[in-house]
Image (tube, rainbow, N blue to C red; front, side):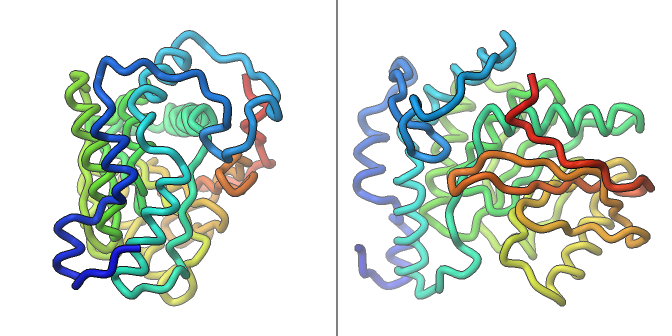
Length: 276
């Protein structure tokens, strides 16, 4: 564990092991055949095989190659190092990642929800983006976001996310991908049409403040996806739409979709593991 003054740490926060992996990676590096699941770390033989479309396959191939240096275990270790070196507790900083395929299918659901409301693709924001994998997935998805912005407070994770975005831009990405190292409560959500965040550690009054902020920032039809806990309350600007179940690195979790200005009853739970 590194023990440096805060400013010195912020200048070079990456784990030595992550630096080593990044130094040995190049754009020509083929994606290795995975023996463990990238989302949960267990053996791939423990998972059920799933059919994917040709479009999903193309995106997954790009992502697996780009994500190769950024193993889940390194993201967890980087998060722990960041909080320790900055004197922060672990409450609110538990590191986790969503399954790549399930996140693509979550975006399919968002596109379907927004299709009847003339919502411009706008910008995608991940509040607490970790190493930034959702930014690349969102930029490659056919929903057509013109900007994908990650907000990350921890300096090592933010540095890793910036490197991933730089590598993605070198591929000739059409969408703008960027990372803001700051407190998610302070960053303006300019042009947002979808916002993703893990609401597991949010409590009142911060939750109500965040709800009002999102309702103000999003256009009519804009979508918020919150992991673990719902944020929407009927009649308060964000209307509950749907509860989904997604495989995450810590296990299956609820993801709640809410939409601005759309009044409808919460739908039944949808398990994205079962979607073709």
